[in-house]
Length: 117
Ligand code: FAD
Image (cartoon, rainbow, N blue to C red; front, side):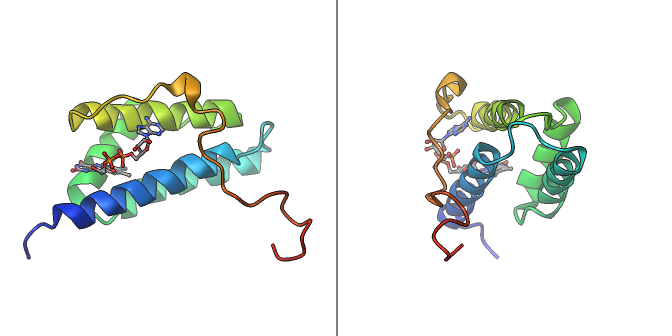
């Protein structure tokens, strides 16, 4: 089957959005179990990402730049950095990671306070 660049880009945008939004909600002071969960998630994400070429490249990036999961800042900064490494390879504009602060808002408000989850 032919490659469909539009679908591949859409998948990429959706995936990055989920990844960065997840980092923005990761605990400031994670437990060892939180950090392990994020490490595992990222490794499985890199293994199972549906675009095989993207997944192979991303696995190499993870080897070179191991996921940082010691805090929200560390995790968000790491994800911004590796996304920029992908941007470089695809010759895209780089994102200013000092501005990542409030950029990714999950829209969930204060979880558990509205009774709807
Ligand atoms: P995207 O890169 O999708 O970014 C979406 C939005 O995120 C941007 O508009 C910007 O607002 C913001 N953003 C940009 N950079 C950052 C950053 N560093 N930190 C935080 N936010 C940022 N495509 C390929 O063709 N080949 C590949 O090998 C490939 N590998 C990929 C690997 C992974 C793990 C993922 C998730 C995607 C990969 N993609 C690959 C898809 C590619 O990265 C883009 O998602 C796709 O090309 C759409 O690009 P875009 O210009 O819309 O912006």
